[in-house]
Length: 86
Image (cartoon, rainbow, N blue to C red; front, side, top):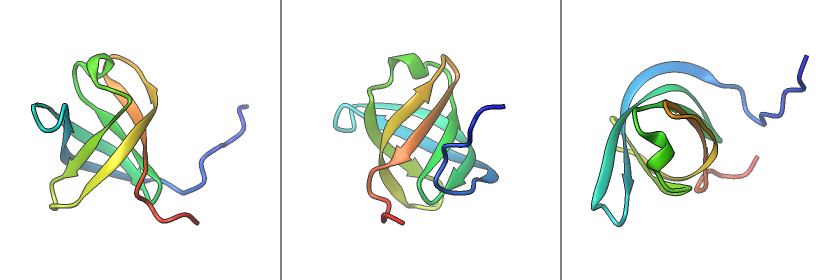
């Protein structure tokens, strides 16, 4: 089996979010499938067209600057760039 490379345990969630890019002129609704202190896994259509870095706005009012770590057409794993290092 593959070696686990995550630094943080993930918590499964089903929350709404918004991918915001191009200084707020572009946005895509998404669903967070899991989240950890260091990042999240997202589902949304059109993820291949999203830039490597963007703002992820969560339904609870928080937002994070993120960087894509992996992506497919429908799923992406992102790392929080503003997360406190552990």
